Length: 436
Image 1 (cartoon, rainbow, N blue to C red):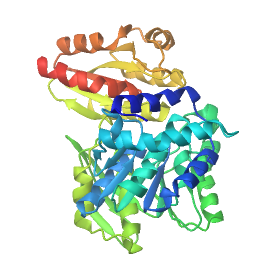
Image 2 (image 1 turned 180 degrees about the vertical axis):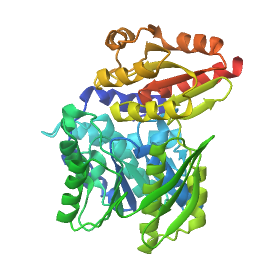
Image 3 (image 1 turned 90 degrees about the vertical axis):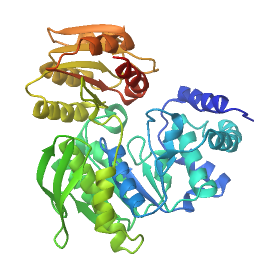
C-alpha cells in the first residue's frame, strides 16, 4: 500500500520498463475485476496524429461555458502529472492519485502473474482515470484522448457518444504503419457501431479508410470540407478569427486566442461535436457558449506566445506534421524576423525531415538534450542537421538562459520539439523571463 504521492507516481513511472504493448485484453481483464467503471459515464473519444489535446480543450471549454462538469483524460502532462486526469481543467488531487494507485496496484500484481503479463504505464493511468470518473468523481461527460493509434489503444475500452479523428500524419510508423492509409486504419479503430464520427482528415486514401469503417459500423460520418466548413479565416495579433457553417447553421466571426490555421480546424471539430451533442438532445449547448468557449480555450505549448518582449514561442511540434505546421506559422507571422530555434526530440521520431524543415527557417538552431528515456542526445540531433548555423549543448537550461539574455528586438526565440521537453522547460523558462 502506498502512503505518499511520490511513492505512487514513482510506481506508475516504473511501469515504463514494459514499453508499449498494444491490445485491450489487459484492460478488459482489469475492467471486469473493477466492476466496469467505463460504463458508468458518458464520453467523447478523440484520436488523430496531431490536434487531439487542442480539440479536447476547445470542446471542454464549450461544455464548461454551458455549465457542465467536464472530465478530461489527456497525455502527456505539461506541468504536473495529475493533469492527465482533470475536472474542468483542474488536475485531480495528490490524495486522489494515491487512492487510485492503491486500487489498481493489487490488480496489476495479480495480472503480472497471468499469461497476459503486467499492465503498461499507460494502461495503469487509463484504468485509474476510468475508476475515478466511473466510481469516485462526479462529472457530466468525459473527453478521452487516445494515447497511441486507436484500435488497440487502452482508451478504446470506452463506448462514447461520438468520436473524433483530428488528423493523420506519419508518426509512430514502426507501430502504426508506414503509410497514411495504414495509420488511418489504426486510428479508425475507435469508430464504434452507430456512434457518429467527426474528422478533419484530408488525405484522400486515409479519409476513404475512415469512411469505409464508418459505413461498416453504420456510423454517421461528418467530414470537414464536406459536411461542415470554415471560411473567412483571418489571423489576428493574438489568435484567429473564422466563420463556421453547415448546410443549415452559420456561426460568423468566431475568435480564438490559440494561434495557427490548424487551430481553426481543431476548433471546427469541437463546434461540430457540440452541435451533434445538442441535436441528439444529449446536452443543451447554445451558440453563445460555443463562441465564448472557443475564445476562452487555452492549451499550453501549442504555438504559445510565452513572451512578447522578448518574443518567445513554445510549440510542441513533436512529429513531421507538427513541424510543418510550426514552420508555416512562423513564416507567416515572423517572416521579417531572425528565427532562433532550440530543439529537443525523442529518438524514435522521423528526425531527418523534422530537422530539415527547421534548418530552412532558422537563423540559428541549437540542439539540446533533456532527461527522458527515449530522448535523443544533442549530439545526435546536431549531426543530422545540415544548417551552417547550428550549435549543440547538452544543457538546455543554460542554452535558453543565454538566448534570452542576448535576444534582440528583431529576433524570435522558438523552443520546440517533444512535449515532454517543453513540460520540463516551461516552469524554468517563466522564472528566467521574470529575472531578465
